[in-house]
Image (cartoon, rainbow over all chains, first blue to last red; front, top):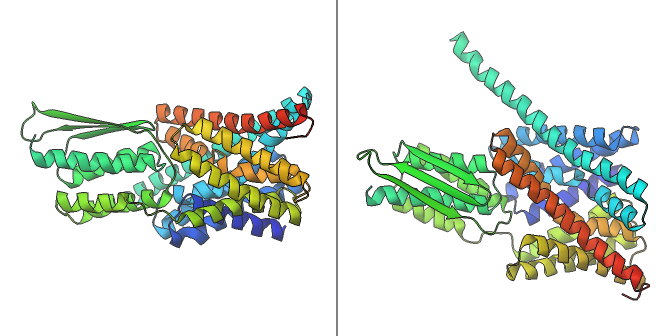
Length: 148
Length: 259
C-alpha cells in the first residue's frame, strides 16, 4: 500500500513535468494524485466496486484541488488535472481491448461497461464536488451581507 | 474605433488564444479576455470561446455605430499549465494596477515565449509515468525498467511526430502502436516479463484525462458546446489509443510472434 502511494506520487510528478505545472505547485499537485489513488486502492481492497471507488477518489481529488487552489492562490485545474490522471481507467481500457482481441465478447462487454462507468463516475465526481462548492461559496457570499 | 481600442482587443485576443492553446477551459478564457477589456476601460466587450476558436466583439464607447469583431481560429493545442497560471495572474494584476497597453502587450509576448520545462524534464516525466504506473498495476522490477525504456522512447517518438503537425488522432494512434511494439520486442529479448502492466503504464501518458476534466468544467460553466466537443475529444483519443494497441497485437498474432 505504501509502495502504491509512493508510486502514485512519483507518477503524478511525472504528469506535472509533462504538463509543465509551476514548480512551486509540484508537491501539492502530486499529493493530490497520491491521495486519490490511495483512496481508490483502499476502497477496492475493502471490496467496494471500482466504479464507486473511482467516484469517491474523484470527489477527494476535486475537493483537495479546490483546497490547494485556495491555499496556493492559483487555478484549481493546476491541481485537479494531474490529480485525476492516476484514476483514469487506462487499465480497464487495456483489458477491454485484450478481451475483445481474445474474441471473448462477454468479458469485453463486462470490462468495457465497467471502464465506461468508471470514466463517467470520475466526471460525475468532479461535477458533484464543484457544484457543492459553488453552492457553499454562493451561500457564504450571502451571509455577510445579511449580517451587515 | 481608435487605435488604442484595437490594441486592447488584440491584447485580449492574444491572451485568450494563448490560454486556449495551452489547454485552459473555455469559461476561464472568456473570463480572462473580458477582464482585460474591462481593465482598459472597454465596458461593452463580449467574448465567446470554443476549444477551436475565440471571438471578441467590442462596442465603441464614444461611437455606438462602431462595432468591431475579431475572430481567431485555434488550431493546435497542447497542455502547459504554467502558462495558463501566468496569464491568469497577469489579467488579475491588470485590473488592480493599470499599465499602458504597450507594456501589457510586451508582458504578454514575453509570457508566450517558450518557458516549458526543458525537454529532458518532460522526458523524465514520461519515463516516470510509464515506469511507476507499471508498478502500480502489478509489474515487477524488470517490468519497471522495461517500461522506463518504452515510456522514454515512445515519448521521443511522439514529440518527433508532433513536429510533423499531423493531427492528434494519428499521433496518439502511432505512439501507442510503437509503445506496444517496443514492449513486445523488449519482453521477447528478456527485459521485462509481464506485458500487460508495461503496456498499461506506457499508454497512461496519452490518456485523455485533461479532456475529461475540462469537459466537466465546461459543462458546469454552462458551455455545453465546448463540453460536448471536449467529451468527443476524450472518446476519440481513447479509441485511437485502443486502435494503436489492437493493431500491433493483431499483427503480432497473425505473424505468429515474428514482429
